[in-house]
Length: 149
Image 1 (cartoon, rainbow, N blue to C red):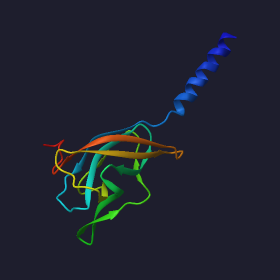
Image 2 (cartoon, rainbow, N blue to C red):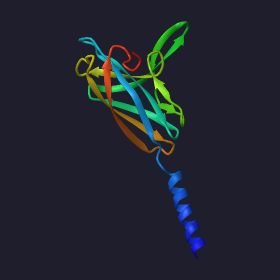
Image 3 (cartoon, rainbow, N blue to C red):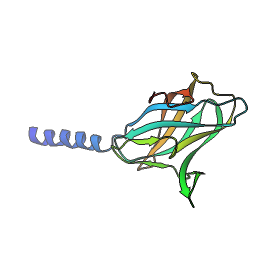
Image 4 (cartoon, one colour):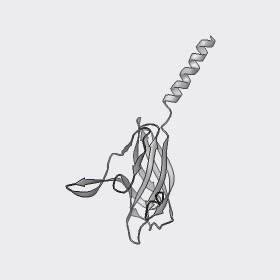
């Protein structure tokens, strides 16, 4: 009887471990400061997840909407394009959103973003089953990456 109970407990613990949600970590989030009248700003960060996840959207306190963008060479010219369908975050790999690659564009700004401001971001991710989770971060505003100065 004790052996049966032990096996049952072990099975429950194993099942609980396999269905645990991915843990997503967002670090070094920052938003490029703007000048008066500017209607868009880039948001950058490092994202790591314990399981494969997908960055689906970003909402901000300073913009009406946002898009995931990517910079790519096209005929010898660097071009920025919207990246639709979300951005894959491989398990246990840090994906850096930065200038010259993938990044988030905060569009239709409600106000200028001044150096030194804090910009609230809500970042939504989905896991392999489609379950969504949100991570809230306070991004520093700066004209240059404040984490590399």
